[in-house]
Amino acid sequence: MAGLSAGFVPAFIQENVDLSSRNTFGIRAHARYFCAVRSLQELRVALQFRRVRQVPLLVLGGGSNVLLCADYPGVVVQMSLPGIEVLAEREGELLVRAASGESWHGFVQHCLHNGYYGLENLALIPGSVGAAPIQNIGAYGVEVRDLVSAVTVLDISSGEIETLTAAQCEFEYRDSVFKGRLRGRKIVLDVTFRLHRQPRVNLSYAALAQALSEVSDPLPSDVFAAVCAIRTSKLPDPAVLGNAGSFFKNPLIAKTHYDKLLQSYANLPAYPVFDREGQLSTTMVKLPAAWLIEQAGLKGKSCGRAAVYQQQPLVLVNLGGATAVEVVSLARQILASVERLFDIRLEPEVQWIPAEPQD
Ligand SMILES: Cc1cc2nc3c(=O)[nH]c(=O)nc-3n(C[C@H](O)[C@H](O)[C@H](O)COP(=O)(O)OP(=O)(O)OC[C@H]3O[C@@H](n4cnc5c(N)ncnc54)[C@H](O)[C@@H]3O)c2cc1C
Image (tube, rainbow, N blue to C red; front, side, top):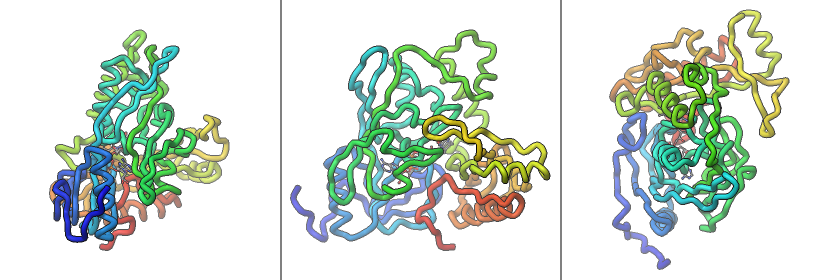
């Protein structure tokens, strides 16, 4: 690739772009440079441009898991690479590869429509395929790690393309190697999923089993419809009320800590924790952060135009025109209250950009 001269801005890179419509929180922030890349070649040009300008890089998908805390002084690259293809089919198992720019829900629909089963429980999660492995998206009893076979990435500094196995992705609850050791070092180009030809449904999540209790032998399409219906009834639509889904992770705490809390909160719910091999932990439990926030009396609480969603206190919403400072201030009040009451430090699930915002 020919070198870019210092003053040159490629036609597909725009300057001073408002990102309000590119993050589901609807927070107003500007990118110094912005581009939606539709090919590997455009991505390489954008990376070269950023090197020449010596500015930082932010990779975005659908912007549904970020809180933009300030204007971005570098290049924001929105991954828009398209494409879905079946790589192999053997003994009822399919390897299906989807490019990072595909819409996640669109991909789930595509698979269901073509009889590639396994993704139904993850229907209606906003965002892109490329972001799915970043925080190991999960819902209704399934995590994407259960279905990922391989992830193709571009190394930002060397430009090399590498393939990571699912084990190398080091998936954990809402976590992966991309949020840890490899943070800011790799860009996901595509993800390959191991799916099934034979319908098999996962009704391990109680609310889902309950929703389908009247259906005998539910099909993947029933699961898909039920998940969509439950999600629509519980979660605010970002197109109507800006939000980024669960703002905090459900905390994992020591069983001894939980037993102590039970003395004051007899009805404190807890979920089992499983390790990567699927072994049940005897020392840790997972608590619903929504319950902790509600107990702290914060349901419906607001700070300026940012509020704790009344129907689901794990979600913070933009009532219209909220600033990142308001969202951060509300989040900090929640963190402080929950820590004071329960001695538990909640961890944001949403990525704050930059990580330590100025207020
Ligand atoms: C209403 C609502 C409901 C939600 N429900 C769920 C849920 O049930 N389960 C769940 O797990 N999540 C949920 N989320 C969170 C969100 O949808 C997921 O985390 C999703 O995977 C984010 O995708 P995105 O493309 O929007 O990522 P973005 O928000 O654009 O990016 C998220 C992070 O990934 C990085 N990133 C994005 N694409 C790439 C790439 N190609 N290569 C490298 N890094 C990349 C970004 O830099 C950023 O750090 C919900 C969000 C909303 C708004």
